[in-house]
Amino acid sequence: MAFQFGGASATGRSHLDRGKACEDAYHIVEDNGGIVACVCDGAGSAAQSAEGAASLALNVSMALGGEIGQLHQASAVLALQDAIEDTRRELQRKGPLFDFHSTLCGIAMSKDQCLVFHLGDGVVMGVNPDDWSDFVVSEPENGEFAETTYFFTLPEWRESLRVFCAPRKYRTWFLMSDGTASFAVKTLPWRPTPNFLVPVHNYLSSLQDTEARNKAILNTLQSVQADRITADDKTLVWVNAQYQN
Image (cartoon, rainbow, N blue to C red; front, side):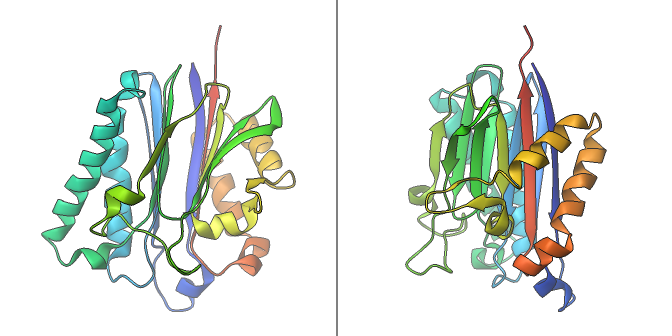
């Protein structure tokens, strides 16, 4: 099995106007016959959320990269939880955890198994590329109010961590922060947008170079159309599994 993948983060207009850097982060690890991809969205209200997002994406990706052969076993979930806890301890040595607030969403995928994990907002969507009406989605989880969500830095983070195994037929995955989700997917119910995700998938599939895919995704996130819809930071990661006989 081979994987095509790409990703990018774009700084939102609200941050550009204030001279602030992007507070989203993503990380992709391809190794041991599988792939792990994470997207993390740092909270705009937290002073060091960009560092929190980057550290979390890196640590979770590396930890699950060692579990590729056993993604449907308890050890993979424990590795995920340990990576989150290790990141919390690492950042706590630098300052109060609330300075590093970030969400988390991602997948770990092998030839036969796919583990989906999600904490907070953002969207994880898996599609059967042979039938785009057949998909699975992990929806954003918001707090008491629509503009609030859950972070890995909160004391009760384990209660907000969602983990599930996805069937093998879902070979194409989109991971996105809430900025991207505002235009990339439809809601009520959550579902793919045929006028966005389908052409994005078709174009990325035609590119043989990962850097070219990264650039194409970045250009899309930085487009005038995307900027008109949301002033938030935007991250999108695309993973496409190609099964070989």
